[in-house]
Length: 285
Length: 285
Image (tube, rainbow over all chains, first blue to last red):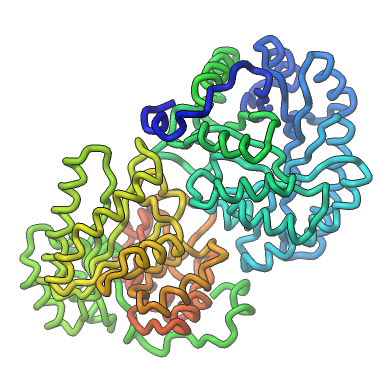
């Protein structure tokens, strides 16, 4: 952890081991799903969050079996969502696609489908927000039937035009409260939310409601680019350990999921990168 | 205005003329201050916000006289602020620099100095926020003595690490309320704040307190880069007219200031660009 953070999170111990460490397949994108499974397991990682592109024609039930056979937990499926669209046909297609994603998560044995809410720069944010709510309402019965939770992930405001009209945890909490389903909760990603002065309070609010369902970690470096420049824990300025402390005080005892999009890291030899991930996790999370 | 916005701001008329149009010198960065003055005046623009780099050794009192002689109002000086720093010496230097900027604004005849709050990625946001408050407190007596208002400009959360630990208008309002000086108010820039679901409410709050001091316009295009990719009004997804309506309902009757950083636009022939700015202002603001 950089010196800047040490003084504000003195009472939070580093992770004692890898029993809560989960990695998203997109983090090691050059690997196939089976390479990721094998290398994560060998490194002592405990969980895996599967991105749909990593399944690519694979049969999700069989993939889930291979994941569990390697001693890994299938933590979640990424990603559903992307509900807003100007054309009603496109919104209906998104709802269908989310139902398919729920089925994939169920077959995989993943208890959670992560929803990236979506946005459409050709319409007002309020309209997109209404369509997000309608989309989630439309798929909730399918989630219940499949036994798969849905996790709303607010994205950083720099994605408000294209990827998510939900940009703070408060918005996600309000959406969950409005829909009030035991199958709907929130995903906290430090990269998206670290800047928010309300973050601690909103984590407590989600936790009190039993809706704190996932915790994604990475770091923010400067200068940065907007899409694929996330960094390893400890390389940037996010007070990851402090935020983890807020999560734990709010009752969260789930996985710490490393989700890093990095053009630079994807070109690196991935086994060496995995060793760096594990070391950074233990030292800076 | 793009079709997406027409339906949500039906009652707000376009600007009737150029009497409220102000342009920031950085928008037409290739021009010297005197070129900007001459071309803005010729185009019927009413105000100019001067960036300190455009003064570059110029004598501000004389520059102010040339601005007024051309029939332009010196609307504000950009920019002071950048208070946070780990080293106390750097913070003291920032305070000194802000006092100098206040003197420059006074000599120029600009009633407002825009403060970009600043941030330091090597320290927690809360610490930076405290230093911003301390820095502003330290320079407020100088602002009062000089008769120059200070405007806190919250920046988009994508700049939280490096340029501003104040990222919402609510934070700016809370800071102004805490310091409670008639010389301290808020600057609303649509590029930084358009995504915020609280924006309308916080504009009303600032207006009710008499603290709504400037209105900056540009647009957000997608895909975008993080620093110099702002767009002309109407080219992107910001509901500029709706936000202007909120400003006016909150009592704001100041200038509409075009502030666009655009690597692409700076390479364009600037007289043609200025004509595009004026047309975009009338059509999409």
